[in-house]
Structures are given as C-alpha cells and as structure tokens.
Length: 327
Image 1 (cartoon, rainbow, N blue to C red):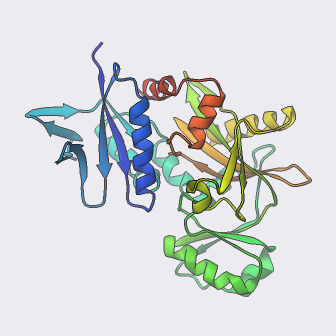
Image 2: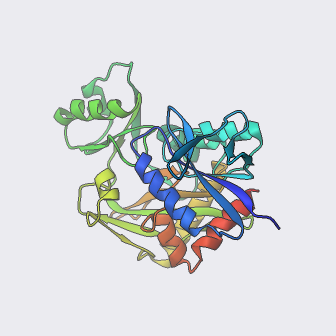
Image 3: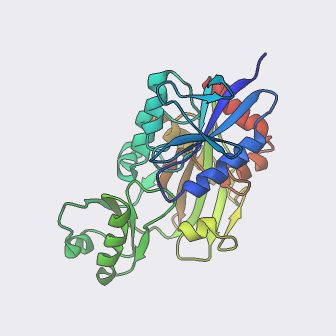
C-alpha cells in the first residue's frame, strides 16, 4: 500500500503560533514514516506555505496542493494542529469540507461553538453530574456597568476572553475596583468576554478521543499551579506549575469524570482528540466544567501526550489511529 500524503497544518493567526509550530514538530517526529509522507504547512494571514529547504513553496488554495520539483502533490488528509484561529474555530474545517479532504478534528460547527466558552456552557448545561460556574457574557459594544456585575456575581471572579485559547487576556479579580482594568485586558483579546464566579478546588484536565470507533477517556492530569490560576505563563513556563498524571482520584471521582467527559464529547458532537478542563470543588467535591479544547497542544510535555503515555499507549499508533479513524 502506498504511503498517504499528510498535510500537517500549523501556525495560525494568534499569539499561539509558536506553540502550534512546536506541536507540529512533535507530531511529525511521531508519525509512522512508512505509512505517511508528512508535509508541514504553515498558515499565516498573508500566505500558506511549505518550507522546502531555503524555499517557501506556496499552497494552491484552489485545491489545496503543492507543486514540488515539477510534481503536483495532492493530500489525502489534513492533520490540523493550529491553536486558535483558523484551526480551532471551524474556518479550516469548513474549507476542507468543501474540498472533500478528511481531517483529524471536530467538524466546523462543533469547532466554532466550542471556541465560544459561553455557548459551550449553555449546551453542556444539564448533563448529570456536571456543574457550571455562574457567569455573564459581555460584548464590547455594550455598556459595562461594574455595579451590575458586582451585584449579580460573587467575588472573586474570573474575567476571560470568550473565544481565546491558552488563557491569554485572563484575570482573577477580588473586588469591583479591579474590574475595569480586567475587562479592558480581556476586550483587548476578544469582542466578547465571560465574567465567571471563581470555584475553589483542584484543577484537572482530561483527554477524550474516539479510537477505533469508541469514545476513550484518557488518564486524568491534575494541575497544581504556583500562581493564582493556570494562565499562559503557568502553561508554558517550566516549573511554574506541576502536572500529575494519572491524578490521585478516588474510584468514584474517576467514574464521574469518565461519564461526564464522555457525555460532553457526545453532546457537542466531537471528533478526534479533545481535552476538557474541570475543577473538583473544595469540600463539596462537585464537578465544575471549565472548557473543552478541540486542538490541544502536542509537544513532548503537553497534557495529551502525557496521558497517552500514562495509558500505556504508543504515541505513533495513537496519531495513526486518529488519521485512519477519520479517513
């Protein structure tokens, strides 16, 4: 059987460009060279290109092909690892749907919805065993009356861009006086923001993936941050947070995570690999949903690869299964 041509798509339009490039590098190293010819395609606002030595070869976007050494390369599969727009918000997915090229992520609708934290919470609300923090959605063009926010929600509050990934633009505020600056910071990243009550508890992250047709919940990771919350610096700076995989959970807690995570994945009509963040509330032990990420990071130290290793799975086989399952 001849090797499939895989377009490994990285980059994007956000501050997570480099993180995405690092994810692509790790995936490329771990795809089976006998089964796949891998071409890393970098996507920016200005151009889409393949780096062939010192030359940038532009992608023909009419049919998503490359011309290399007089030959036309067409792709059997798109492996999207762009964090943020246009790979996590449904734009690339819609493009590949129109061209009939299969890809590894959720479809365009699910990608667009899950990028919006408020809409996602509205859909998963009501799942047995799942709680969501009380919140308000604000739009840049509306008036933002600090006293109304303070009257409706209980401090401390999290202020976060509604469509942002990787915790950029997030703040934790303890009183009304801190609100205006936090709102401004979040609106700098997005035209919609979410103001959410802070839930005190242990923070976890879990990968949910469809493998061989079955929804599989990977071993859970507990995130212990030395900062007040798991922000961009905590995520990407060595030593700021500690990650424990598999997490120290009781059998009952593990069972709850697996049933809730599976139900979230199914209700949102997810495909491929996703990662869900949640909190177990201190004392009460209630499960609070934070968000779901549909193009999770894929470096050696990223959470999904950690969880794949903890499950005793081989990362090369794992990525291969994502491709074969989608094709």
